[in-house]
Image 1 (tube, rainbow, N blue to C red):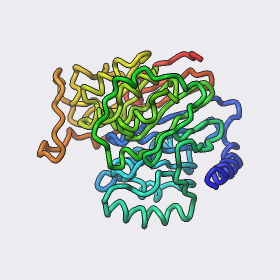
Image 2: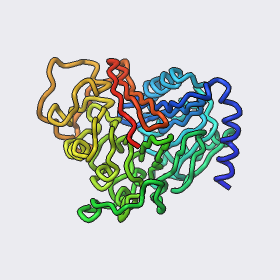
Image 3: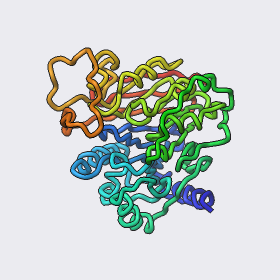
Image 4: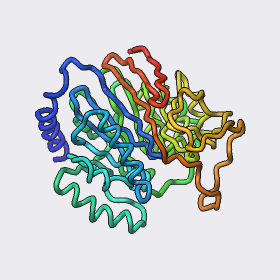
Amino acid sequence: MRASILVLLAAAVMTTSTSTQSPTDDTLTIYLIDVEGGNATLFVSPTGQSMLIDTGNGGTNAERDVGRIMTAIEDAGLEHLDYLITTHWHGDHYGGLSELADRIPIHHYIDHGPTVEDNQQVQDFIAGRYRSLYTTAMRTIVEPGDSIPLPSINVQVMASAGQVLQQPLLGGGLTNPYCPTFERQAEDLGDNAQSVGVHIGFGSFRALHLGDLTVNKEFDLMCPINPIGSVDLYIVSHHGLSTSNAQVLVHAIEPRVAIMNNGTRKGGTPDSMTTLHTAPGLQDLWQLHFSVLSGQQYTVPGVFIANSVDDQPSTMPLTPMPAPRRGSNAGPPPAHSGPAHWIQVKAHRDGSFEVVNSRNGFSKSYAALR
């Protein structure tokens, strides 16, 4: 029933959207939006259909993050969102959902189902406001193996509700050599491990977005065989934390480019940066933020970083700042509530693509390989 609903919706979307776009346009446009680590990512197909993954922070930061998302939506010329995927029920990923829905129509809501956490605020949101939104639109609780029918884009669900894809994609299926050395961490019983993760195919171009999927689930997905093969673009999981981004995933998929949606003190830790920098075949790592947790020791050149802090210091320390313990009194991270910049990817069917830093206009092209 779920698949038939999605196919019918795809037909309706094509009917209403294709008139404003050139049928010869072969560009998939991707906006990686600065929501201070929440990994909001907007995909716009060549014929104008759209899919947004996650909506940034809520509470006092909802207006800031939703404003940044709307700026990207307006830049793309969209009048509605065809799909909204909420990867999981943490405040930095669903927090701006209600405010965004007040500003632009959303036709189809996608998620992994109820939260597994004992969080009354989240449960009340899902049963109340969220229900009121999807009952006047559409909702799908996805499972691994489902497809989201964005016309001309192949969006395959790789993980959802703690389950992972069992059958390899085209181009995957070989033994993963990194499996034997993997060491499991303590099981994540929270919503990160429930994340909806998707693989995006556009002609020969391949991208991967796994939300905040944690390392044990990465192992379950990637072992003993690699079901993905290699990708052109890895949208770095979980802000660039080492509770995700295991070698068994990152090195096996051999990304040509990685883009990390981190905050100034949220992600980009030395261990995860080391894993990213040493990934076979990686040409460049781009960051939404300079991370004080990386320092200059592990970060990338400034032309690859979209945002810094509002009160720009004259120098940055070479040594990474130790990550504060959860619940500690470390104080707030350096502020960035002013103008924000996105990183944009323009991908083509032949597998070539360009990445642009909107802060400084720096861009780099990557040739087709397949």
